[in-house]
Image (tube, rainbow, N blue to C red; front, side, top):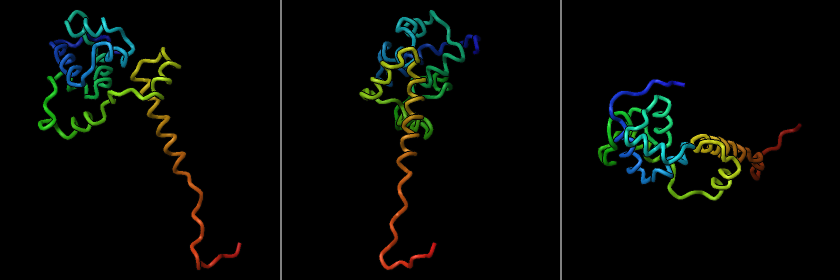
Length: 146
């Protein structure tokens, strides 16, 4: 883990990205598995930003770490293609009942890890759905001897 504190003032960009994503400090803290007080301290410049913390914040906010360091979010019309994709892939505001139940089962996991784990489970379920029985032979098709 990197303990080096990032110099400069990206803290105001953390707040800008949080507001842009329509998240409260509590909601962002939930996603990171930290207290909302820590988010407040980061935004006020009381607590420094390590490289690891910037990566975690970026994941929770649906942007790249460089986005947090470089400035506030821009309007969707001015976003780059990559930023638009990250915006579209940002976690949904409405909580899914299954996600909520999963979160209650594993309260010790930070929100970002829970989201990755859920995504892996959803991918596995999709793969299972792809394993369909072989199609029935077409009418009039020649049968091969076994």
